Length: 609
Image (cartoon, rainbow, N blue to C red; front, side, top):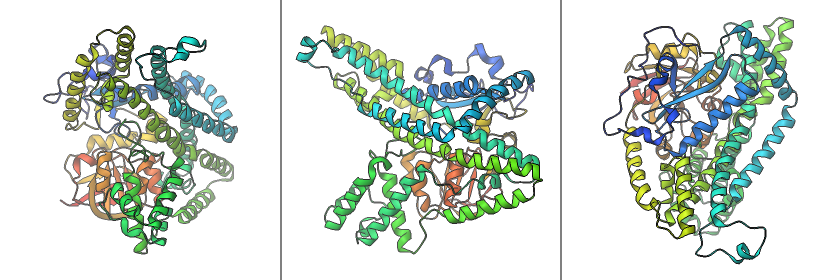
């Protein structure tokens, strides 16, 4: 993103943002490099930073910063050092009152851009030519890594070591095994992020190249139509929702659908089902499909509290309840795949027919490439953000349990209030004092820190971050920022000119259609169960993990996201009108308000307060 030379901006200076009352000292939760430091003021104040509410909608617990540092390391190395994406290097981040803001590092020198283009064409070209083979290897590597993190043993600290430690040659003591297991857990996380970003930028790159060709030849083509031309492609990530629809049909066919009452907890539903043969058969079928389809997360996966459906089946059961109701009412619950395919093919044929012959060949080739690489844009989330990360967080919980057993923490969950390096320090002292029989300081040192940080996170959660800070940019050039977050030059200008409380919001026209209904503002995963039939979902961002509740909602509105964000893709695949990247929807719209969502033109209007 090109830095602005202006001295004024529509957005506040990052150095002028005040700490909320009672939150003094919040910086202790984060690494030293995460802040707007005076040493970087001249540069940072003249850059454009936007709140990454897509991935980090609430203040960051200390340990969860592992899902900030490592992803941006991995994104940067693939984008900047491997594929050398011509206009963009990597992404910098800063933490403000617990919230993550990001800014791209652009490449502005024409000679450097040309130099990088040579690397990109050669290396990206190799991947595109061997896509199926390389993608198959990615899935093999991810399954192996998931198995490793699942099976990795966190040793206990026994009163005395086992006999084999004393008598066998090939053995390690528990002190070494604990520290090695923790180090390997963290390294597995880094390795996952390396795999995660290997293909993602190329998926966006193929789509962007196709989009640029369309716009150069067809200046009036809407972004939405470009996106629709690759919609309707079956991807692995929609399989869990399909399995839940089958379970809903099974409940009706076997006569146990009466158990699925809106507002009931999964435990209450299970209890009723367990009382009949048909109900028990339904539960057996549920167990059969859980592996792998319950390896979804309850949110985007990047926070420790986004548990898998194994651990928290609330979303899955709410989806079955919604499907049962819809099926009873004679409604369609399947994704409108055939309609999407017809519209996809119609648009491609009609736009292609408008092109001159020399451009038509490039159009067809780039469209085919975009459709080939598109599944990865969604499927990687199942392997990485959901299946792996939910297992990763649970492995960290095992270290929390070890520390809690020895009094360093009051509860295993408290481990997430410590940074990953602090956890390493606590484990160092734990194994030291266990080995020597000495008196540990940890039980007196860590619990007060944990208590203070819980309080800080609660108070910081009451603060509303501005959508952007720093200088208003002249142009946005980073393809990842444009494609995933939907932060374009036009979008930033709209953020800058929009008025608080105006009752009208603009964003990206992500999925067509116009509907009116009651808003349901959902900030975090705990509120998903409150979504009711006919609601319009308003949230910082939605993820494919929320797709099962889409049978209940009429439309979706998000604060952030572009036409190729996960929210936009999922809404198109489910035929729901959507406006994404509004900047301020969750702060300007309240639950219960009647709103109109125009997903064809990217406009949200508050109709009745």
